[in-house]
Length: 349
Image 1 (cartoon, rainbow, N blue to C red):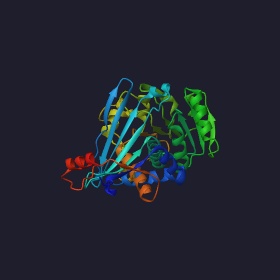
Image 2: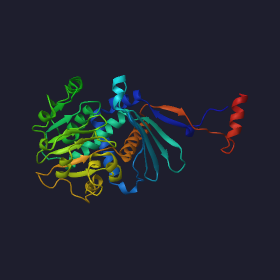
Image 3: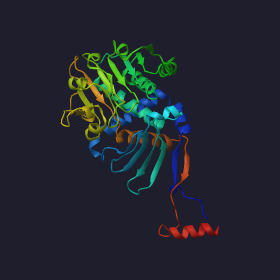
Image 4: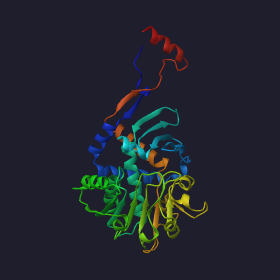
């Protein structure tokens, strides 16, 4: 039996290889690179297939597929969300993703996406804030200091120039973990005793809590004029973080409305409540922040195009020589019509 040909070997980036890639490029340059890739794809938004993610819900979590295509490449991500996993020492979110060539249907990349999703989520949040937050914003509050918090902090420092962070989590250990990880990164850190304390003086407020419930992390009186809200945690039906009255006072920006109305903060509003698609701001088709007193809200739930962008970024690194494994995951008979014969020859060997 002959060895598989190069076209049958699919590059695979493991968790260890992703960490090595981040280390080689540098966390901040990689966040910038991902943000640039996402922005470039948002600017060609209309070329993509778009659909709300395909979700299988249970009482304890959700498993989702997130597909899209630009007509040349096809990508999807498998991702779960199980808030109770941490009690078993497991991650709340795990993910992997695949890119394929539309012309042949052959996979061209398989990659871990647990780390990559954290990076692309943070890069997308900071990209949105770059266009929606107050221009002079230097202070951000992060409420919810779990697995996503440090990535958000680093992205906002790198892309938006944030210098001061106010941290709060209902679990003091999570808050201390976050602060310990961010020490030495050039950020002034303040650990707070409540969400109310955390938002004081913050021009940007990021909420990234994990529990699947209709929660009120921020009440209406906690959000003053001129603030930018980066709502990351509300990302499935039955899971929100903001009081409804905050939404009614905010200019709301979303990725893909048919998905966000199901999963985002705006699930609490009427189905026809006006929102702006963020890609239109990037393309100059819609206004972003127009008034210093305006409250802007990026109702971020994550969308497949962002994963597509992240996978294409990683594929470019692999093609430039980044470490990966080559997986023999495609049958490659000498005669493409003789798959059975390939099996017989393998048995003979």
